[in-house]
Amino acid sequence: MSEPFTAVLFLSFGGPERPEEVMPFLENVTRGRGVPADRLAEVAEHYHHFGGASPINGLNRDMMAALRSGLAQRGADLPVYFGNRNWDPYVEDAVETMYRDGHRRILVFTTSAWGGYSGCKQYHEDIARAVAALAERVPESTADPVLLRKLPQYWAEAAFLESQADAVRRAVAALPDPTGPFRLVFTAHSIPVRADRAIGDGLYSRQVDAACAQVAQRLTADGTLGAGRDYDQVWQSRSGPPEVPWLEPDIADHLRALADDGVEQVVVAPIGFVSDHLEVIWDLDSELAELAGELDLGYSRAATVGTDPRFTGLIADLVQRYADGGGDLDAPGCGDNGAGCRAGCCGDA
Ligand SMILES: CC1=C(CCC(=O)O)c2cc3nc(cc4[nH]c(cc5[nH]c(cc1n2)c(C)c5CCC(=O)O)c(CCC(=O)O)c4C)C(CCC(=O)O)=C3C
Ligand SMILES: [Fe+2]
Image (cartoon, rainbow, N blue to C red; front, top):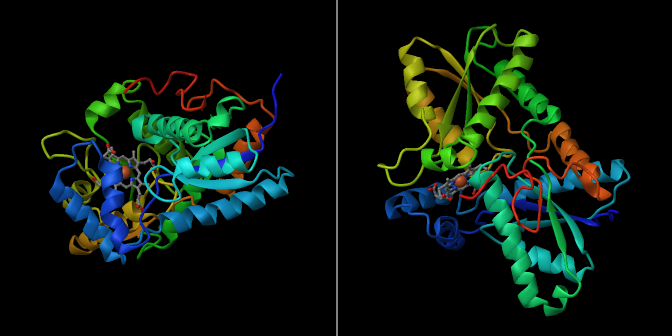
């Protein structure tokens, strides 16, 4: 017997909205992770470049609004609440509010599509932390417990891949020479090689690779791409101490190599991210675009899936799939109250 869920928690990374929030935010993100102080100071500058505000919270609110209409269209009127790992509104506060509003069965959507530690396991940990905080803040809740069920990873969903493919098509049309040759370069957030190996023997990097292949297949089918592996998949935004190996090649090095090979135009597709937050608008639209200019490369950055109705409709579909208490509980990424994926895919790391 399964009972229906009554609300959705939209769980994301979080970001500062004012200059004085930048350092405390970065300290939250990097606590205990061995990110060197000079890297932190450098990243703080990226935020200050945009007035100390990341667009991420606003973008998430836009996606939530689109999700609400998608749910309404489907006749599934679950309220949607917002919570973050690293900044206000914090996930602990969101879950407390939801509980006080009477919700006991809550579906959790995360803004990462992927498996692995940062994209999946760490969100389970955030959920576990919020459940523990609730027990402290509302002691009666132990007798009337909450169930937070994380929705599965969605990188392999057709609507996600199709939305990515369409973003690439639009980016090709925006190249300086839309009918001329170009190289398609997919990018996702780098992680330490050890972290990648530790979960599912490269689960995250294999998923990114598979998603790119799927998108490329769609683009080959309609002639946007030539046959064969006519694209590259690289990594961006590495941090950590320089002596620690992270997934490579780095996108900046890769653009230099392409220019050396005589490539004249590139389309950069940030498949690893769902919205135009700072890792996209700074690392790609500022730094990488400038490098492309220096290298005399025609450059066009594909949109993130963001509020594309196919993507926000997919979120609504995921909610609907699980809303009545059914759905595939063994789907990768799915799990209850932060106990981790039932499928065991994101392991212990
Ligand atoms: C896989 C992955 C995703 C994609 C999945 C997902 O979306 O969740 C992602 C997303 C994001 N990463 C973001 C920001 C940051 N990530 C950092 C640091 C790190 N990211 C890592 C991985 C990932 N990160 C890792 C292994 C680290 C090292 C420290 C650690 O082991 O945790 C740091 C610290 C400074 C630095 O070192 O760069 C910041 C500020 C923002 C918000 C942008 C905004 O504010 O608009 C978003 C969406
Ligand atoms: Fe990150």
